[in-house]
Amino acid sequence: MNKIKVGIIGGTGYTGVELLRLLVTHPSIDVALITSRAEAGREVVDLFPSLRGFTDLCFSPPDTELLTACDLVFSATPNGIAMTHARALTAAGTKLIDLAADFRIRDIATWEKWYGMQHACPELVAQAVYGLPEMNRQEITNAMIVANPGCYPTATTLGLLPLVQAGLIRSNNLIVDAKSGVTGAGRGANVASLFSEVADSFRAYGVAGHRHHPEITQNIQSVSKSTVDLTFVPHLVPMLRGIHATIYADLIDLDKSLEDVHHMVSSFYADEAFVDVMPLGSHPDTRSVKTSNMCRIALHKAGGSGKLVILSVIDNLTKGAAGQAVQNMNIMLGLDETLGLMSPAVMP
Image (tube, rainbow, N blue to C red; front, side):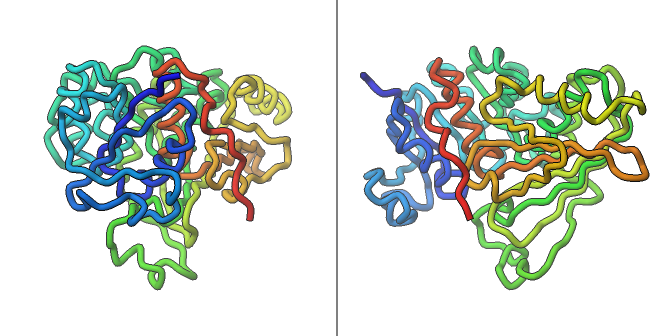
């Protein structure tokens, strides 16, 4: 059987190597090229020894002709790069999955405000599909451009989606207290990410405003019947990978039992391969999803306040980035959605 030809723009970061880890063993995929201006000519396994024996690729400069010869291209680059390739790729019939944020926000002015640059192809934003399969599976099937969601928005949206859509919680007082491992900051040299800066410490950041806030708000607003008012505070914790979102929401019907809420959320996700609604009383931890494409969710009622508490954990590099991108790729190419993604989490 002929394999499907894919390319990767910018594969030297953490999401790039995670994407390669998943793709080099995918039974239907041939990774034809991976680009990097800085590392052009260097063997991939020289930079990532974990891939020795799985690929003989070398990094190459981005070449439009080679990229448009692919069936699908991933962009695992910083914000602002994918949009410079989008017109040429889509015009040639090559599908694009952007792991950065170039196509996530529908309102161009909002995007430009939060990302600090002018959008290079605003006309394509309306055509792009937000790549959260549990929310937009049918639209992803026919998409030419998929905006792969951010890691915090993935964990938060999956936690809130069934509750907001069913009208069980108030969307005007949502609080998200989220924690991320250090790989969420990327692979570039950064004093704030040094081991001696992060170890044995814990801090919030972006409290006055974080670029994932409008993305989460957009997601919840798309299924809410009322205005969304969201407080979102991210934190950096001294671990390599993982997202833990603790979400607080007010039930509309205060007499609604936790058992009934749990049954509804469990039913909503019953056919989803990558969402695990855990038994009542559970407290999911990030190591239970490490290197997997799984999101684990638990529901509680906070003692005293009566607030509903949703715990949602993912691996920021997998379900929060590369794994979700492969899931989207499978859907776009008409493959089994779970193909190449069914490995369990790594323990310990």
